Every structure is written in structure tokens, then in C-alpha cells.
Image 1 (tube, helix red, strand yellow):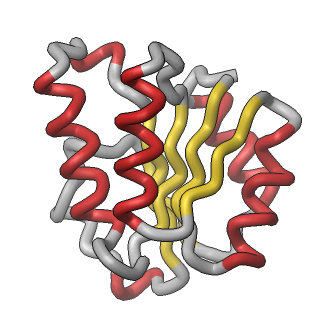
Image 2: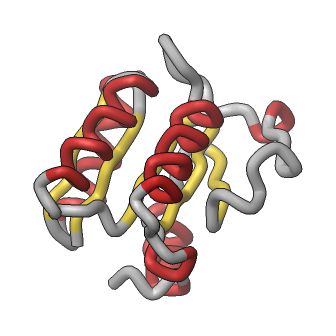
Length: 129
């Protein structure tokens, strides 16, 4: 499994990296633009991501805009909907999350702090591992 973690908070990013490294390669992007760049670079080398953990509040562009760019890139590449990268949106602010904004573009939402057991159960439910 190859995972992209888009997280501007270094401690949260390292936590997610450590949590997911037991399942495969983890790439950490520190802002929305870096996340989109990592995604496009992976696609161009035919090393697609299986999962993206996308923080919502990030500098440069937020998680919503980064995800929209990623989904747009998948559409341009002709990626079938059932072959798209799975996405989990993550935020520290549960009440600040707008579930209607991009609900068709991501699979799940989790609030920080990440519960390890719930997260593990979630990625198994998504059939990523």
C-alpha cells in the first residue's frame, strides 16, 4: 500500500506516518500544493497512491481544494471511479467540518486526535489493507 499524508502539523504528520508505515510506503506533504504535486508525480511514474489522508486546514491551499485538484487529475487521466484513490479527510475541528462540501470526493472523515483502533478499523472497512 502507498499512502499520501497531507498534514501541515509536523507532530500529526509524523504520527500518521508512523501509524501507516506498518502497511507500506508513506509520503508526507506539508501543505495542499505539495500534496497535489506528490499525487501528480506518483501518477506520472505509475506509482499511484492507494490512500490519501488529507488534513482540511492547511496553508497555501486547504484540503478541500487539494482534493478537488486530485480528483480533477484523476478525471483527466480517465481513472474509473472504482479505481480512484481512497481519501480520508481529517480535521481538528469537528464542528468546523462541512460534510456536504465534498462528500462525493472522499470516503470518510475523522476528527483529531486520531483514535488508532478506529482508524485501523476504517482502513480495513475501505478494503485498503
